[in-house]
Length: 286
Image (cartoon, rainbow, N blue to C red; front, side, top):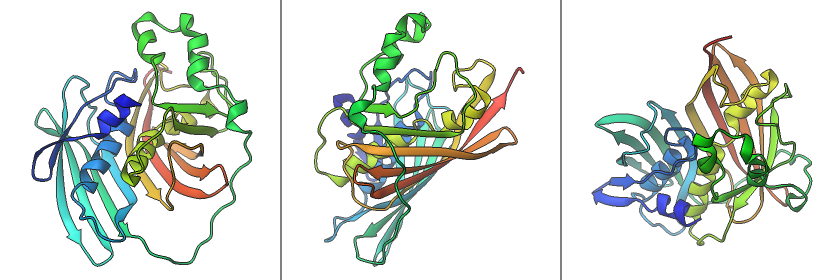
């Protein structure tokens, strides 16, 4: 948890310019959810504190280049618009003098309006499910030694899959995943911390869901897998230190690209966020 909060505590180095650190989660490059969450923090820091405050309601991002874990990331924020109700920001993430990621974010002053939502899916209580990390550690002896330490390290998020796939010997399955998730410890009350943490978590499992019908995983050596873009909408306030149900499905894969979409519900069945992502799913050797 401390490492995650440190990741979100960007260093201001000039007006509207921030620098962030990296955390290795075993992919060999910067995790997309990390860049997404840090860019959101950078954008929100340039938004004035109104009453009521303006919080993010939507993010739209493109992953341009793989991030280098050994180099810090610098975030440049363009303050595009400050309107009566909405604020718009654009963020560019830079490494080695090149853009690796860009983000458009919109912030909205809280107000009342009409409401409806989709019904939450059925799922067993999170307390009855085994944490994903425990499943990985139970089979640590089967993980290649060069990545074993990273894949079995402590995590800031407790993911509890409802129908966990076998990551080492996957079988074809429907393109649907459900998992409970929350942080492993309490978070500050700042809504930005909770939104940024969900942005970080929202990149988990999207492309993995695309691959499920084909009996493949993101670590299959025959594949070249990478996130291409990512969208996230915040519908209502929520807390990431309380259980949330993340349901992901993939309606289509074509042209060496796969598409997935997600919905995030509270334990009471309230829909608080939605996500969508397209990713590269190139088969290099059939």
